[in-house]
Image 1 (cartoon, rainbow, N blue to C red):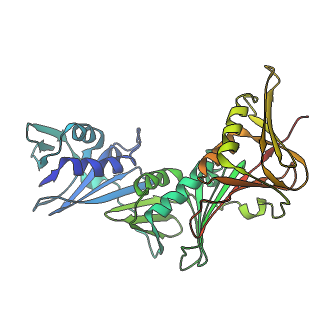
Image 2 (image 1 turned 180 degrees about the horizontal axis):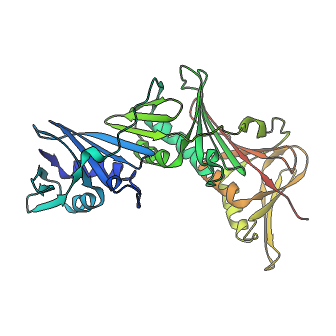
Image 3 (image 1 turned 90 degrees about the vertical axis):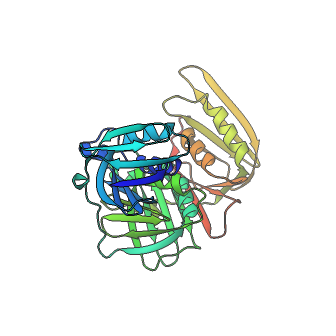
Length: 372
């Protein structure tokens, strides 16, 4: 087995795949990249058993072979090379030798046949989406997904596909984000829950990408194919909570305000809030929004007044400032609207502007009990 490849091209592809590999693996073979050479095509795969990602690289070769190469060592050496062709040759003593312009480096390899086989999806359904739109959908929702191991269904993003739209939902029971695209549809109705790790990988690779991503899915796995790369992952098992039921339908009290002004005010005031509850109080009367926080343990308190446009009854409502900050920071609009019904019902945060055609974002934040 012998092939020649550009050092920077190989490094760029391997760094993407390296994101799949865990720091500590139960199976030692998973610390390796699988190199599957078929003449001038080199298929490189990385896996952690749950998620497997592979890329097809074009190399200069006329041989074949299947070996597993230590990922960490290979990435470390590739990072030090300037752009140049590297020659990989398989030697008899179970090592693979890399020759550069200046030297030779030998790595011990493992038998490629030991590497876990990639899952084949049996009769999957499929839909296609532009890479950047998928990255945006993940970006807009992933921060709201939970980290609770006892409730695994809430630790991922819920994908809901239908002939009308595509919907992406994440929640941790305190906050909820629903991101919808009405300009993209699927041929049939489908629902599945994607774990966070593969989504973070996709988000990094696809940001700004104009290429099409084909999503294939069945009961247990999903596969994302784009350009020369494929990612297959196991879905989270279980039924997603009925999120529509928690979104209040009647919200007569509507507050509209500049997002940046609201965000910086909440950030400033929250410094003075209680360090365990992070509670801030919003008091709205007429065209004035009063944001306050106090930490009785340390006699710290802060209060700010902002002008806003408001329709509805005067009201006081408490929120966890961390959730509110995260949500406001995740929107990229000039003005936001906060719709509320009662101080003990969830508030709905939506962008007033800055959305693409067919894009809908709904954020739900649960209130906290105010202690008067």
